[in-house]
Amino acid sequence: MSGMGISSSEAGERFDSAVQFGFEDARLQRLHYHLLRLTSVGLTQQEVQELGELGRLAFGGSGVSQQAAMISQRADTSPLASAIAQIMAEAGGGLGGPVRMPAVMLGAVLGAYAALRHAGEGDQSEAAVGGAVGGAVAGAVSGFVLDNVDRVGAAEYVRMDD
Image 1 (cartoon, helix red, strand yellow):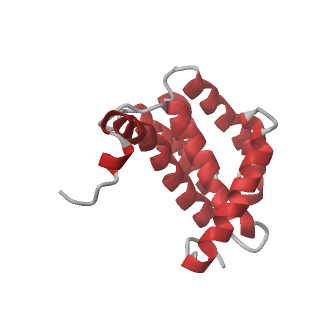
Image 2 (cartoon, one colour):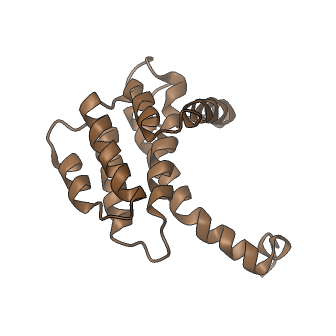
């Protein structure tokens, strides 16, 4: 199955596979290994280095716009590298709430792992890009949501009435 045409019956398997790869790479304690894993869904070695620099800037609290623009504007940039760069540029410009740039970067990278289950079975770049967007959204917003849950309490937060 190519692209984002992921069936609901396949969602759990994609999740499980992505999480297993994520924990395996996280044990190596370097962003570099997460990015290397994504070469199987379209990143080039050059993009691994460039995205590594983007990550260094994000984790270091520096501006990411120049590095993100350099990546996304190159004519031969892969769809996944371009997507991650564009996501980081948007996050760096502010999103209407408190954004932790490392969480957005990790969300985009780890979200792209959704495409790994079928790596090598055709072009998985669309699935990787969709996963990167979803992961980055979760990374950008989940900290804020969890802070709200801490403030109001879990029972209040999950209450379904108005």
